Image 1 (cartoon, rainbow, N blue to C red):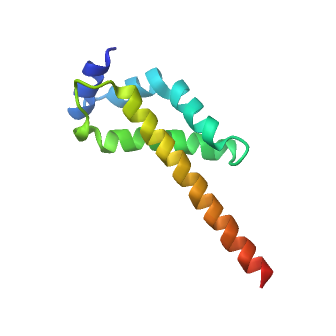
Image 2 (cartoon, rainbow, N blue to C red):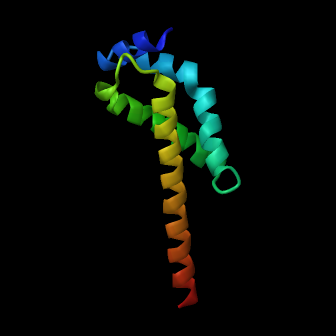
Image 3 (cartoon, rainbow, N blue to C red):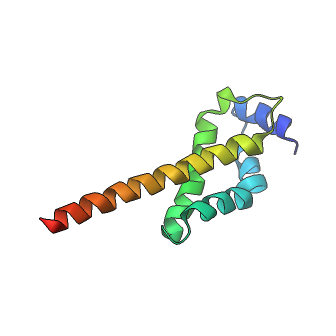
Length: 102
């Protein structure tokens, strides 16, 4: 299915629209997230971040533009979520390390 049709379906909250996007792009989005998080986070964290990217797309589907491709938008969402997860994890590690020093 073409991105334009997918965007229209997402914006209209059409049943199955998100499933279509997931089927079409999940492997690519997994790779994006994996490249950022592999070796630093668990497989579960990677999969959760991928899921979060699709949820965020769904939540913000009203902002999508029909004349723009979906993949770059979704990729940026996934990349930002992965980077945020790394930052949060780093903060937790620093906090835990500081607490252990006391």
